Length: 154
Image (tube, rainbow, N blue to C red; front, top):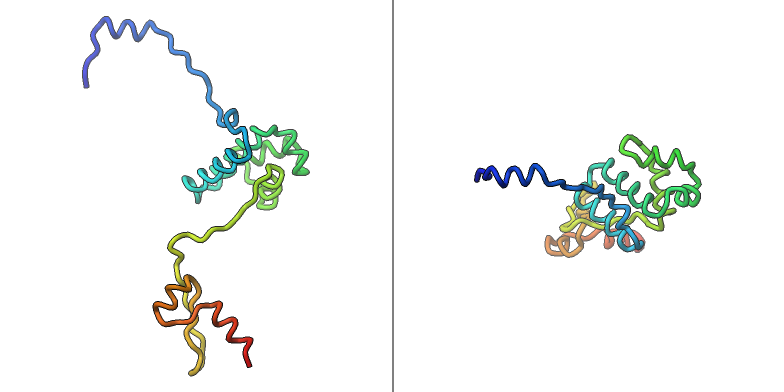
């Protein structure tokens, strides 16, 4: 590492660096940006519930906490507490907040989907595979959907 000259060190020590606080809520303007922010949080911190709740709190602050509280049917103070880093909101509260924010929780299959197999008892019962139907065909087994329709036949 290079050592600074005495003159450069004096200039740096005398200069005033002004830092301003940065708040993501100031930059979440559209519902699309808010959804992308929440999606990025899921991608980055998928198993960290506090990070996800914190992201919902950021989005709620961007839309206005009082307005979100009114739309969700929750008190403003309880909403602040629930969406803070110290809060531990119920799943019902999370869903109500997401609805009030105009967001919805969806499930997407991870790629590749893990195949889960379960054997049934009996000599003439084929092996049932839950998971990717193409992979099941490649293995020569029947998919769960094919098994379900087979049960409807006489």
